[in-house]
Length: 305
Image (cartoon, rainbow, N blue to C red; front, side, top):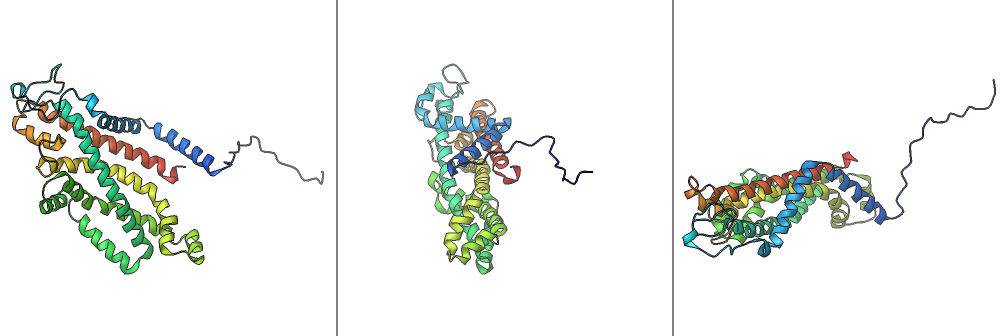
């Protein structure tokens, strides 16, 4: 027997993945993988298409609408869907299709403004509470529990009743009820990483708590917060429609979808299109944001890599 050590060669070597040469290339490859995973789910693609269509409709509303959404035409009141009025007309003869098209602007305005308010507020409260702990965590979480203990629509109704009806007041009321879940999620993420080695190294180097939170903790919480915000958009649409239905959202004659359903409920037995068309718009947009949120959760979850 030979004294030479035998060399065992693998039957088939796995192809090695080349390391990215720069941060830009790494980000480009990561984005490409995320997009491939996102478009692999057909339901997510459907949700993305509907959301993109909503944005396009809102941008090009003057071009897509074939009537003025505010002009009354009483001789054509309560007309069924036809070639001239695709979704019919309401009790004042206004074209429902054009009102739904312009109503997409109000919906996007509410979604965007609430998200801009809720995201930073919830992220700041959650990361601060999770990082410091102690009485800071207790104080912030007890306030959060108070907000969560009430149904969001009921709490929004209370705030709007105190502030008065109006679209801006509705946005403030929805934002005040939508930040607690974001704060709880950010706190949970912070608790899981505040004892990590890189945080300890930053502390030993003399980094301030603000720098550690902003530079090291917040970026790691962003993916979960983005997913939660996307899925919250469906609830924002429904809450805004509920406030509009009760007359506490956008004031007449603004073409808000919930207010359109409220005005048409008196004629819904004979004129079904008054509530069916705006109700369909609310359902499709809410479902689209839920589908998109599910897809983003699968893409941004690091356990799926």
